[in-house]
Image (cartoon, rainbow, N blue to C red):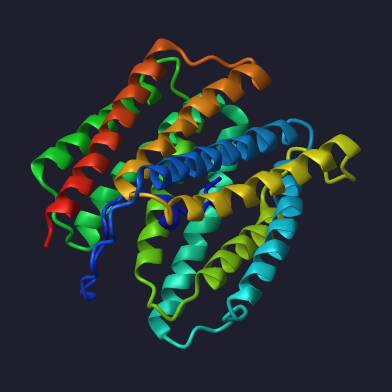
Length: 320
């Protein structure tokens, strides 16, 4: 899941780095906004179906083998997509881009493997609720790293969202496990990954960045400790892996398309439908049902995130 192309889907504020200000896009029609919202909901459904499929497969197949097999297929697809952009830039010309690429790859493999390990042990709804804090953490990181101005309203929203995460984790109670911390560590590493992504020069093609991300995760997967030995997947496991790759590809494509159709302020809040998908899939596929504290914490996180998106959209509209 952390392999998702979050820069294209995140509703975090613009992280300006001294670039020339671009003219604001024209306001989209109602039909375009509805289309963008539909694409965003489809993207979130695809990503959560991928998570559910991976959680299902890793119950019988080792995580290392599962990630490796899926990674080979995803890497091949991203390589073909990169060719359409002009090919993979194997050695970026700028030293800064090479350093940021190395940092991003380190954060990519760490966040992905930690997330998938946590996914094996946590309910789908619980881990998805923790992941919903990502836009708020990105907004806070933007203020710290890129000196992005953050008013008291959005700072309050960040505090409320983080309080929601603490309610979901509930440290000091029997509901708290080490896997909750693993999931949170994964989210923090995704923040590092996205900050590195924002630092790339315009010469770095998106296809190259995505290909390196998939490649490094695939190469690092066999190094993971495996509870069981590698074996030839069954027909059902192979079919599930194929579904995972399909869901992930659909998620990538629709996530990008969603942010190119309709107004960002209208479309972005629909990314939180991923929590609903997580709860439904967790209940139907795995018999999981979040407790009331998870519901309360998730409501705070989602509410704070949606408020921040709408507040950012209003501030953008007021800028000359």
